[in-house]
Length: 300
Image 1 (cartoon, helix red, strand yellow):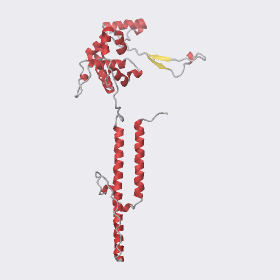
Image 2 (cartoon, one colour; image 1 turned 90 degrees about the vertical axis):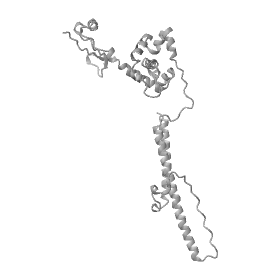
Image 3 (cartoon, one colour; image 1 turned 120 degrees about the vertical axis):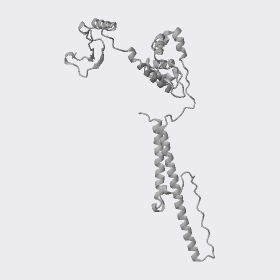
Image 4 (cartoon, helix red, strand yellow; image 1 turned 180 degrees about the vertical axis):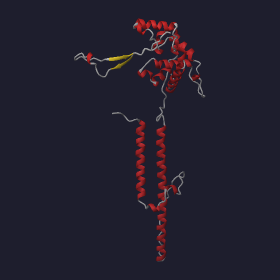
């Protein structure tokens, strides 16, 4: 069974507690006549004043020499004071419950907005292995290729092409990592797959934060894509590149396709149903169609 996230579990606890508080508030309010209690928004109790409920003062004993009329008058006054004190206490309790529910609602909003609920007291240890690339480039080129999937000379060429891109200019007070480091992080992610390219694993390898790994990847992609038109273009019909491409197509296919040199998409499409002509009895056969689009370049 899938586990609930810690955020969802915390929100459920907050909602349960808020429901209990609301039920207690309703039970207390049901014990009194609603006409005797004004609305909480019109209550005289201020929200920022702590609630202090003083006990009711006891009824003073009746003097033996008091007349009956004075005794009845004293009891009536005490009952009136007791009713007013009860309403005052009820107003205070209502304001207290309202503030408590407001605090619970604010806490729920904070849980929803927080990106990190529990910060680890001890930071994750990282040890950058980027300095090893310098040694690999000079003495172990095969290890350099294993990490970045290109030769050191190709790395330097790409670095020269994208190093001056404005995407690597910091717009804030925090400076960016060197372009060479950002390119190494990008190539390490681009040359691997699976868990090895996760921001967490690359951050431990490069000795940077996970956010830096993501930012470096985005910046290098922007810089490389801006070089598209400089390195990828359609050769002219009379150029040497076009003639070599036409010869290659003719040798690999047929003379009729000689001029189809610009696009050759070999995407494989799986067939849902087997064509009757290819039925092979009880044997299981998977048939595919390879789509090839080759626009012709006709010479004038």
